[in-house]
Length: 504
Image (cartoon, rainbow, N blue to C red; front, side):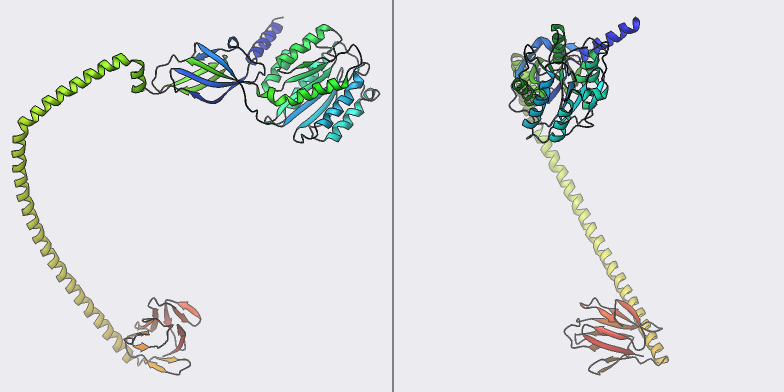
């Protein structure tokens, strides 16, 4: 017994939590703080009044106003619709369902992005399509297969009046539809006689509201109580109930229009309603964070505006004017006394300043003279050091050149360069030989592709090496570009378009 009571309380509390679902649209407007306003979207498609809202700021109830907003345009969404078709071949309305569904499928063929599924149920869950599909031909085939009264017998439906079949079918239908993309507008359309509706409905309602899958019902009730129960179920899930006249054969055209009206209104109803909520904040204007809770379930965080002198002055104009007058008086008196004080001290300050300037000028002149003398001495030392270093370097270079020249004579090295094509022979007698187009080179080549100072051949004590002097066309030695390379007897050297052969 206690277990049942706890379950009942849980269902009631769950129903209260799911009764309203809302979201904040845009930002919270605090421009006119302490008046705070924001746009709130409620999933419920019915227009609510202020008594159906509650607003708290930082846990405290606040006075607020609610204004319903007309929506200019609704975001277009693809639709996902599951038809739950109760298999009741003995009911006179059963024969009308197949043509109604078929015509609906045909009339919605232009909407190729929307998808449908059809599941048949009776005293147990019947078969359905494996997945949602936009394929109209497949849907129509399934419809007409099940319009055959003998077809259902093959699936062994059994009479079991104690089983709440409709609620079980809805539970499974919500599970199936809930797996479809949340970005779509999802809905379930039930075609039923409304029997076996006495079971626990709250879990179905909670699941419907949680996943935003309304239940629309086309009902052919066998009693008034069944119709009332289904109407409440549709209302609680934000769907609608359609009850065709069953006193005579159902009007297929009327049912088809009702079905199309449901389908065409899905996006509008799924969007819900927009409201502007406005309240006077209890928070101080200090830039601190605050929290708004709408309907005890939906917290929204925002920052209270920082303190603004302009806003404060506007709200306390008389006090601001008094403080401003006192401040101006104090500033005026301060300026007057300040001027008198500075006049009295002006002469002394001027004298002190002039004396300080004279002393500073003398110190600066002495420092500059000392600095100039020190600079001249340092410059003379630098010149002497540089001259000595240059002299040493020249002596070292001269000694090195003489040593290498003696070594060349000792080894009797007399390398030659033969210009290929002109057979002109150039002798190398010095340690360093320059090659280029300018006349001051040791070997002058009158070739426009040869740089002014193209290359240098140097005797390094063991042999001769050639170095590129950053020429435009470089040096090609035996077919390879080189910047610095050892020369061997018979090497082919190309400078520009001139080719010479090295002999030693």
